[in-house]
Figure 1 (spheres, rainbow, N blue to C red):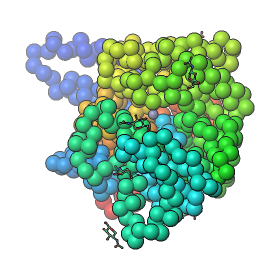
Figure 2 (cartoon, rainbow, N blue to C red):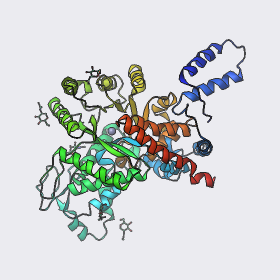
Figure 3 (cartoon, helix red, strand yellow):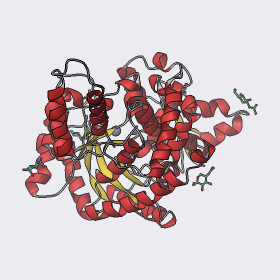
Figure 4 (tube, rainbow, N blue to C red):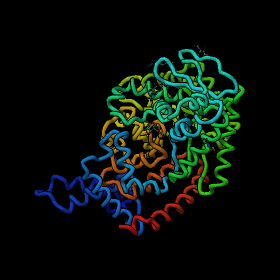
Length: 510
Ligand SMILES: *[C@@H]1O[C@H](CO)[C@@H](O)[C@H](O)[C@H]1NC(C)=O
Ligand SMILES: *[C@@H]1O[C@H](CO)[C@@H](O)[C@H](O)[C@H]1NC(C)=O
Ligand SMILES: *[C@@H]1O[C@H](CO)[C@@H](O)[C@H](O)[C@H]1NC(C)=O
Ligand SMILES: *[C@@H]1O[C@H](CO)[C@@H](O)[C@H](O)[C@H]1NC(C)=O
Ligand SMILES: *[C@@H]1O[C@H](CO)[C@@H](O)[C@H](O)[C@H]1NC(C)=O
Ligand SMILES: *[C@@H]1O[C@H](CO)[C@@H](O)[C@H](O)[C@H]1NC(C)=O
Ligand SMILES: [Zn+2]
């Protein structure tokens, strides 16, 4: 885990020179071998990072811990996260990653940022909360001052307050509610979710179940505040939230528009930052369903343009969400998505693209199309290795890939996280950030679990403290913040990082 300080042009020259030597020597030269190994190590994420003494000490500890972890028979990244979660929680590397200042979380969705436990124990215990059971084993919720109108394909509404008063032991009811609000299960995950179709269907059902809870105005505010708290506690200092900007409702059924929702997000962010000065802030990426029709997407793009005008520093941009394999490809929406450019309006895009294993389909074309549409980052980019041109463009233009390991595993694109395509991207320092997508849906929280999978899983033995440092810095460098704001955020992050590496209690124990 030695840091090599080659500058890029120099590395390229060495590279040529070393390659020429291969094959002309009659027996393999150990010095040449050493040089090639060092060259490769210098090419990875963080490979050129110059490490301080304190960082090197922490790195030595990390290497030792990682070697121990990798020699385990029950190696967590090789297992489904639902099974690995308890093991990860006891890992000393995980506890260290929790303490590590990770910078920003750039790919997180609005209604899956808070632990489901909080929804069950806090939100469903509030007064006026009604629940019904759908005809296909899911649930829906609504807060209402009077008995709400019946919902199609759902049982009559029951007031949870009344139901809980009737039953003596509410554990089973709470468990069943919890089970409906996320994908997490104690049962065998491969048996519960045998295919992508099954897991995506349950995923969408869970979103609809959560929807009625979190779009109730008082909950909406508390939920976002709670979300910021959870990310902050996980040592994340900045958030770019992908938000549907839903119609938020009051107890009397009246609703608010998108501007209200944006304003609420903004007010709560300001309030949070004022009481947590080492938190840098949050911005919103407005998202719309990709299974919508062209006119609906055009409408959403127009709304986004208006919101960008009204909230220039708070709205980061626009994205399309939902299962890529079932939605229309980006190209289908090209006219709608070209509206801002045609009107000369700045509306940055942050497209989900390449969250698929269906190589060669029309949807698989999304990666190149996202780049053609000037996307600022790529959400997932799971298929990027199969698109050398898109990969090259993404690297040259600094369009970072938002890698969400646990999401890709739970949604069945990869089983063993050592085989995640980002392993290859990290080995050549492709612009990328680590994020958590829908942590609550996957039984995770914040960013640390995903950092663990990236660092210990596909990072392998080679990734080191420099890799972690570069990943954290990437999350600021590739954020939507202006150059000036990035400088400021980086300073704030650097102060916390220095404290982390010098005052780490792990070093004292070991
Ligand atoms: C729920 O959370 C809110 C906001 O954090 C808090 O004020 C309230 O007391 C909690 N209610 C319950 C029932 O836990
Ligand atoms: C369950 O019902 C909802 C509508 O209530 C529907 O959108 C969804 O596709 C159904 N899922 C299954 C598996 O039938
Ligand atoms: C309630 O029920 C659960 C499971 O059915 C059981 O584990 C728990 O001990 C019960 N709690 C009480 C207070 O009886
Ligand atoms: C979801 O709720 C339904 C209806 O209450 C229940 O039958 C089902 O077991 C719950 N699902 C899970 C996964 O807990
Ligand atoms: C497009 O979708 C919107 C919203 O779902 C709907 O109101 C509209 O009728 C649809 N338009 C066409 C042309 O299908
Ligand atoms: C993408 O950027 C290019 C160059 O700045 C510009 O000509 C083009 O109109 C943009 N396309 C879209 C869809 O924004
Ligand atoms: Zn996503």
